[in-house]
Image (cartoon, rainbow, N blue to C red; front, top):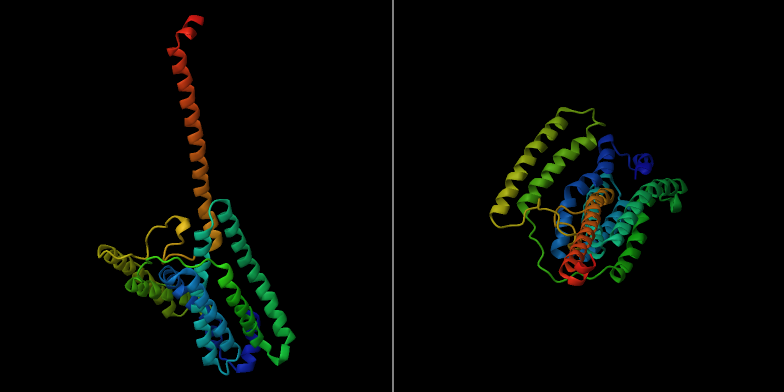
Length: 299
C-alpha cells in the first residue's frame, strides 16, 4: 500500500490528513477489532468466521480499487482492516485446534514464514503493479489484485478447512469488548498519527486516557467474572481446543516462543517418568533377591 501513496495522492488530490487516514485506517481498524474477531470465531465457528472475513476483505478491496474519491477510499480501508481482523485470528485457532506436538510446531513455523514472506513480496509486487500501470489502473491495481486471490481462496477454503463442530461457544462480553476496543483505539491512534502531526497535545492526552481505560477494563472484567460470565482475560486453554475466545490471534513468532517452554517441560516430564521407572525396577529386583533363600545361600 505504501508504494502506491504518491500516485494515489496525485490521482485523487488527497490532502495530507486524508493520505494519513488512507494509510492508517487499515491499521487502526485491525487493531481495534482484532480481539472482537477472535471472540466471534469462538461463537460462530472458526471456519465460518474465516470465510466471512475473507469475503469482506475481497469485497472491500474491490471498493478501494474503484473508489472515486478520498472519503470512499478511507471508509473502505477501515472496513478492509475490520475484515482482516475477523479473518486472521481464525488461522491461529484452526492451527492450534487441528495440530499437536511436532506437527503444531511445523504449522506455526510455516505460518510465520508465510507472514514474513508476504510482507516482503507484497512491497515488491505492489511496486511492480504501480510501475506497470496495467490497463491504466495505476495505484488501484494494488487493491484490485486482492479480488481474484480472495475469490480463489474462498472457493478452495471450504474444501480444505475442517468443519466447525457443534458446540456452545463463549458469549461476546460486550462491555469488555467495548472498553478494550476504546483502549486500543486511544493507544494506537496517537502512535500511528502522532509522528507525522508533530506530536500534538491530543496525542499525549489520548495515551493517558488509554491507561485509564485499561484500569477500567480490569474492573469491568472482574464484574463480568463475578456475574458468572466469561471475561476476555481468561487464561490460555489447551492448544487442541483453539485459542481463547477473545485473546486469540497472537502473532505466530510469539506463539512459537510461547510453545518452547511447554515442549521443554514435557520433555523433562518424560525423562522424569523414565527415571522413576528404572528406580522402581531396581528396587523390585533388590527386594526379590532378598526374599529368595537360594540367593541368600549363594551369598
